[in-house]
Length: 177
Image (cartoon, rainbow, N blue to C red; front, side, top):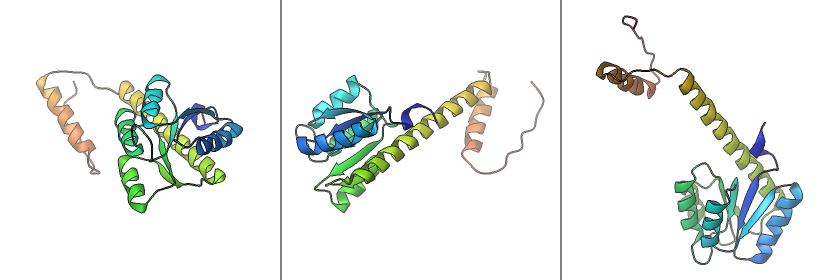
């Protein structure tokens, strides 16, 4: 596979506890990942904007901007960026809410290094597969695109969109041209 699923990925670790941050950074760096750090939610959002990353490990209890708000903003602004919640005060309700907001997974503190690495690897691989799928779809659309802007052609596009949303078989008839 190509690029970002391997250990050359850039990971942002967001936690207000310097010991937790250092521990996660050590594990990730030892595995070969490039690691960036943020001690609060505001810094995390600024860092993501200024210095794109491939994955975010995010605590929920953060100063300035809370973890759930960071998750909301990241999933809205960067929907393909995987976010893994890492929390010591996590509840089932918080995990469900984070997942509904788009978090890839929810890890409880203290974090098991092997589970964290497996989660990171899986999240990066999933993101890479989604990027690959999107690229292939764009290539197919560009290769097999239809041309035309007249009203009859626009009606055909509308019918194609309707038919594409179903799993029904479609028979296309008509003259060439």
